[in-house]
Image 1 (cartoon, rainbow over the protein chains, first blue to last red):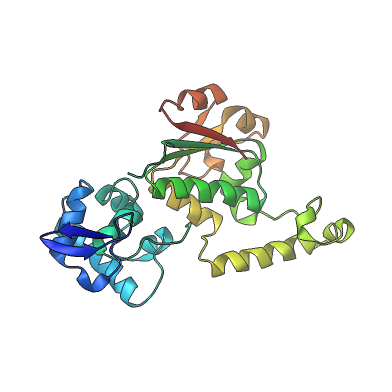
Image 2 (image 1 turned 120 degrees about the horizontal axis):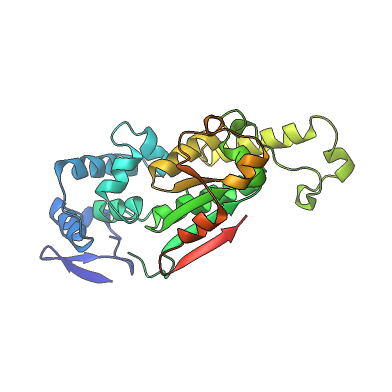
Length: 102
Length: 158
């Protein structure tokens, strides 16, 4: 599927996750966040940086990992990305939705 | 928000074997991760999972559990249950599943509401200080039902 985000044609899957991370830019992240009713702040971007770091190291993301991250605690994570924080944060970060149940 | 019609998951946990406790925790946490509200009501033996002194000592049942694939008489020998529990915990750790105490912290931080059953607390002569701090209160089953106030609420007994 293709979708126009921030004046660019981007490949996404049926849930709206980018299928090619190389197409991701901060503007695209910002646009996706807006669609999720999230307005990005510096704090949000710190979390996205952490997620990108994990993605580049190919380490799986989990809520337990967030707790141990030293970047953000679980409570704040839920507050910043309400309604399914890992799902939303990974979508904004332009990486696949985590496959884990925990 | 996804297309699910489920808006709130309410669990009643009545058992303290590891497989039942984790089933409730994983489903309650999974709900929160999908943006679904979740609550757990701990009753009867489920109370073992929220007692400070007991929660890290829960076991898997080796007797009366055909899925263990060991003869029931062997399952009853001293130490077998502890060994099976140790093996299961090791496998869970490999999958990055948190221990019970840490899992309860994660649930509470994620906004899952945790309650203890009044009748069971009275029956086992427990005090509030015996229970972990993440427990928000001691409720009757009626109180718990009254919390099922949203359209799309599901109640699950474990």
